[in-house]
Length: 187
Image (cartoon, rainbow, N blue to C red; front, side):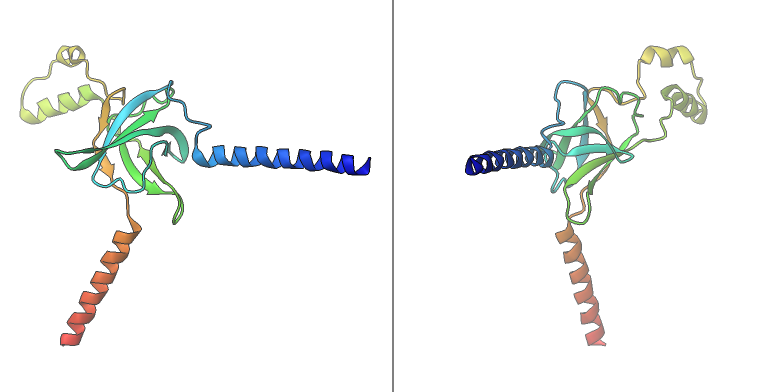
């Protein structure tokens, strides 16, 4: 009877361990919080998107507001085109929002960080432009333009900062150090 009870407890312990490993795998792979149905897509162009992966977090002020949906290469501009899927509750982000690729910790995963821009009103921009040009500004033209000053589905974020690659930084440091030491040797 004692050995039977021990076998049951071992079975429960093994099952609990398997469940814990499954939950850990889901947490690490970011599959448990990825939803493709809600939200809207925004495009950002980066010169270098090294280390960024599909389903990487998109954060703002340290809070996850979306995920990276797609990463592809543009043959014409030689840039990485990153499609960001933002949650549907984040529709009031200014159109001049900037995007940067950061690393969580020293060697952690890459993620996209957004920073809200000034969010200037499109009509105010047109009025200022007309004033600087010396022309007249008609507010009715601005309203009929239908321009939006917030990010929406299909918007393109133009202010971006590419990924910092540790190997490139080390290479630049070493080459600068070597070139300075060669200059001192020649003196």
